[in-house]
Length: 472
Figure 1 (cartoon, rainbow, N blue to C red):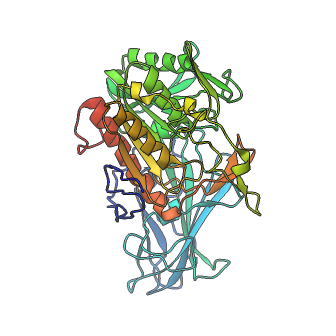
Figure 2 (cartoon, rainbow, N blue to C red):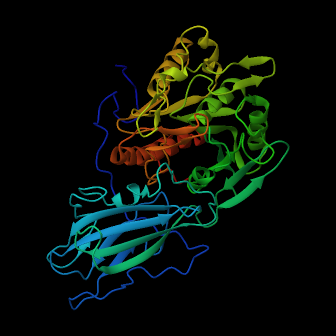
């Protein structure tokens, strides 16, 4: 097995990095677009005891999606058994739910930071944020995404009597907004030249370290990761590259000149701090970021989340250069009895002819690289790609990239507390595919990776050491 140099101790196959993370009480974000939610702790049904059961949250009514949320219940009977259930609907109305069984203390109190969940629910053990990371769609193959970052997700938390299925009597409930934009962050639609994007600018006069953010083969213009990152002091451009407005409808051919236009837009923006910018990409967006770093000027730091070092899925052209896509063998796709495909072996090996032509010449890049790797990624062999990219860089005298590996993490490593998507539709495959991952380990990976990404960009775009606060 490969020996990996990582910021956290992550030798392949090791779970040593997984430790209990601190759960500080976050500073509440100032409210914006507040909906008429119930005040925290509003009790709906009076219990048999003299006290009224109520839910207490901190922050009370609103928090940013990537922030921890402290959950407690008061007014229960001594050692009373209850079931807690969270519910959230996405913007298409699809329902995501999680539940957990608990027993109150002798004083009738229940604090999820101190009380472990009992077996029989969506999770067990001491999991203060389990009711969020364990949310699962009630309809198969749905992935939780945020389309409109200007509005929050509305989370409902209910407390039921007992551990029955279906749940017993409703004792209390509360609603809470999980928001994406911190107060003062500006959302600026960008339609300059061919660019189709959204720029997020932090509060203040700037200039701010700049980052271009790319998602994968799903297309469109996802903004939620970009705006969450902007909350920490970065100017982030969420860039669409196909399947959006007048951009190409299908992923067949990309011209790097389009991405060059976006890089120049950021480099010339008065609110973006020079002399260069960063790139952040997941999946297909990862290999596009490598191509940008390899051929374009002004890139100082590039982070890939489960990306490929070979060009995948579409022809890439830049001036007189053409990089063909890595070959695919559909016969290596395995489909189970439920119709879910495992595509991890479908791609050819870019080290072998003729597919070596698809290997992106990342040794031409003049930037630092960070590879975020889910070791249970079933989309493709992300760890193999990261290791081969590292070998290629070092063979050409370039600095060894940082590689951070997460055992038990799947393909979609998102910002903290997005629930793991085990399987969903793949536009290019035409059927649902398995993405890999184990929910708890995947959640912990997302928390740590978010910190690693911010520290990496802080260090290489601002010159601050990686140990400094990510809130610039």
